Length: 79
Image 1 (cartoon, rainbow, N blue to C red):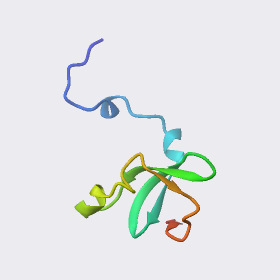
Image 2: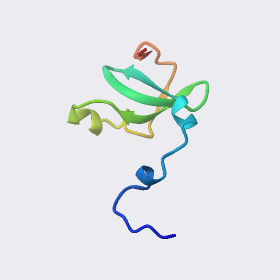
Image 3: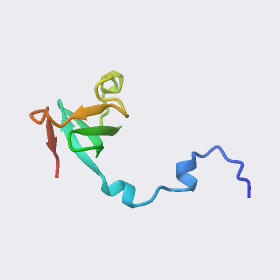
């Protein structure tokens, strides 16, 4: 079967629900982020939850960037 569509693949074939259980919302340097634990020392940014365009230009928090858990004073979980 071939689908000719302009919709992204994620809309047609949604990811598994268990991939979302690894993600958590945190605040890092005043910016809300969705991160995923990569190992015991680091987390990886999945998505930026901000309406400020300057946050999207910051290379330290761009999606795919790794943040060390050692900087725990700026990294706190939001529950």
